Length: 328
Length: 202
Image (cartoon, rainbow over all chains, first blue to last red; front, side):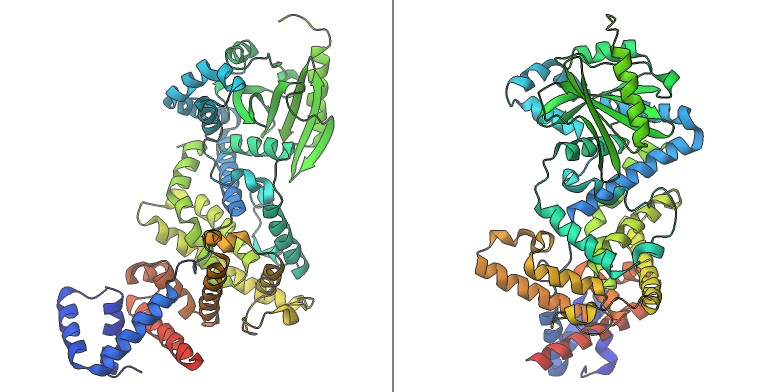
């Protein structure tokens, strides 16, 4: 097409700014003389401006972004636990607390202002919310769980594509689910809890206070929330205590007590009864199990990817431990 | 280094290139559902070989993984297409804008859905425009995308990397694993096909 076939690549090189100074100069001189090459260059410029109208490149859906953050977070956590079990997890957790310490300003600010948070929308709200979502990305809440689990990628390390095209029906279902996902405003409490759980697994913010000693965790909460979350020692029942954290659920600061079950993390979110929606029982949500119950004037929500039976066992352990109501 | 800080470092380096990764996967696979899977798989592969990453251009490194994943997917979906015969609806669900060749059922479904429910992801920020401008703009975007989609590989990926991701010849050569000369000739060929198509339309 080019008038001077030997100069075709130079034409593109000039358009792409890939020619060195000498070639640029000499070729520009050629364009001044050769009308055909000049016309071809104009055509290429026109094509470029057409191709580069804004919006042609695709943008990743928010749900995908969240899924990737979750998958990578899980993988990172898995890496830590796989290699040396509990010990490494502890180290992992200490990193989290060190991070919390680097954000020391936010921590102390939160310490002092939690009560204000409850009364009005003070700047502390955003501080806390910001801290609670450390490591998460915009759009996190929109669909964290969307496929973090259902993809099964991070668990069974099977090649993706074996199942990806099981059938076009699956594809249709998936794209439908995606469209609906985005359109339905998701303010469901289990969404928020699962999102909080996944956020905590992003490995940068699992716990604020790291200890397996409930006598440390309990007083730590005392200065930060206006209720006393039950912090139980359940190692005997197979739920070692990992630590405690503040989270931000349903518009208020809540306590999260973190336990471990084998290699899985369980977040137990706690807030005063009546402060949020209640749902006694269990639910399955995007591959996560959620169990909730009330005791001692508090609502408790356990979220994890462990078996529902494990959550039931945890709930039973909580309820029985509370029953005698021994003063702490 | 432990998992937590490794994960954080990884995210800082590669999440900024998520859009580029997704866009490349969309244009290679021509299928929105597959692009999701491809990108997720790519990030996972990238993370698993992150320890082998020795600095260098993060975008180039990530996109070369995305590209490999995309072609793995194309291969396996072609294989699957031979086995699964119930990909039927694709044939008549295809919009006239789409070429009948190579486009997988997913894209057809995606576009079919798009006609009833606008995909907010693709509408992007055009909600700020007046409805008329928005429609015009979107149809212009759709035309350009369709034009690119009709390009055969390897010209399509080369053009996308150059015009949409604005990568240098050297970066494109690294991603696609060919010499710079090959990148140049592919790019020239891709543009030639596009200008010819444009002149045909006019």
